[in-house]
Image (cartoon, rainbow, N blue to C red; front, side):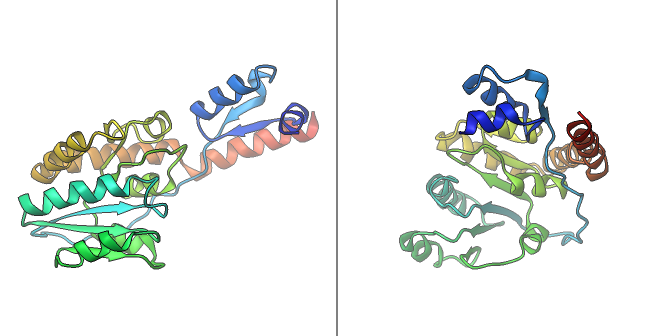
Length: 226
């Protein structure tokens, strides 16, 4: 059924080149030119961040705690807390196991959030976005963080490389690599700002709502009149 729907479609929208490649792999009979790579728009956000902070805030954000790498994040955070006194950690997920909650609730510099909250409020505090995800085909939260100039440390997955090329990438299960990458950004303010600036510029160009709206209009017109 899926194959027939795709074959009959006047056009197919893929959010990434990686997704287009997979479509052609699973459905080799599809017309290559029929599949257009158009990501969803991501307008730049403007928030007033706290200046002259005496700490660095790391945000782990993912509703599916296990798939998003919550176990690795928790293990890395335990070691970071022991090493640094000037860090703050925010863990936002709606599926955080009790054992992790009970452990981190002992620390004043760790905030556990398992309820709805406007993520923009969390980004205001964030200096580093951390996503050691085990599997992801896309990540709107990563793009949102980048749009605010927040550098990211994420798993080395092809779709994430495509949507956030200026992030720091580590193998999905390499806890040591994630730890060392976080230590590097915690200790290097200039590098954080540089990666954040580059990431924001990429979002501005790649996910510009006006440009994407024009592309979508052209595609719909082509599909309607052909």
